[in-house]
Image 1 (cartoon, helix red, strand yellow):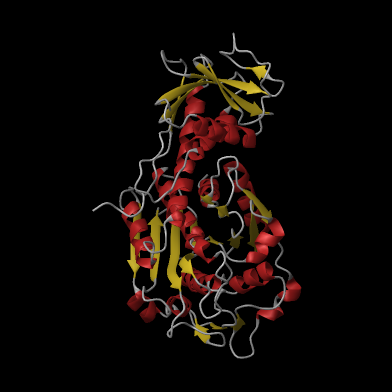
Image 2: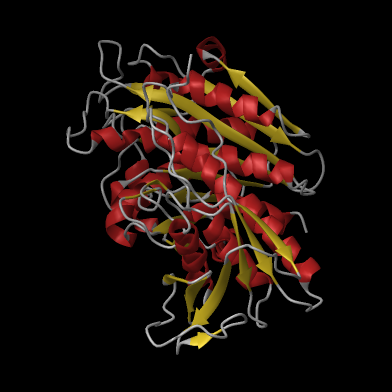
Length: 476
């Protein structure tokens, strides 16, 4: 019987680097602002070209592609728009892109990232997918830099593959994607990668170990929670990445408005980013030790759902007074963080979550928030994001709101008064112990309604590339 969802992971456009162009293959000429035509532009009339990033124009036997001012964002946009242009009924199987002499590794990374992801598509349909170019060759000419550029292209494609997998997992509809599906799908993919192992724990184990937060959030659903642990490497610094794995979020008893609730299939985007990052780190064989933890649960409404006013005991014994069942992400993350600190001896912990609407208001829909107890780790996250083409902004852990986290009836209050994104982070900090810790709130950029640069509508996969780049930094 045919699957009800597309295959995971999605196949991306292949990209190679070579010194020579091929015969009888469509040629793509790059155009900078001006417009200035790159190699292969002889005979092309540039009068109607602007050179703006992503401007793709078909000529007799060739294409021109605008690269704008040549920023990394321009090259991501150009690569993505080229693949979109080379789609449809007459889509060629392949094309040659004639690079300009100033192309370096950074530009190749940006262009390949855009080209690989720009044609991404996830649609549950009985119809055949539209035709799309299958591969691109980046032609350097005889520059002597082809090995450096090939390495850059391979890394970019690996990052794009991680982003696409994170998108696949988040886009999968929740009638398919329950906690068991998410955890077992991740484990199945991990089993295909040398050096990466996966363990999936069920609700019985969670109960035995005292994962009160995960059990409370998942208690209202007929589809019980799971806890996924991915392990890679045995030497080097030990990084622990923790991703929120809420496979659907009704808000529970504190039910969400119906308008927009259908988008809550992407509420496990943080968990998807962690899964994809662990697979990418293992495939690249980075000399670092990384553990990925994804507490998976469905936050539903029923007679067994947890309630506002409940007191929940987390892994390790700390208790939380529940004030809003729609603040479920911090409940499951608290368990996972406490488990990591007590059992894994991490050198740092990074959690990733679509946590608060407050961050969408503060930073918009294209920038992630970074909260950290350590200046160096916060800077490392922002720098990793810059290299990966993902924007982050550090937010403060304001001392004047720390007292608000304390509860009169329990150790902590789940939803302290004050600025929502900051107080949520202050709550999570209670479970980080003395370990350097960063909390990444991706509520804004995890999903897009618009196409821009390499992003298409739907889940964006935001955060996966940053985690891979962060692991690479600590492997040096």
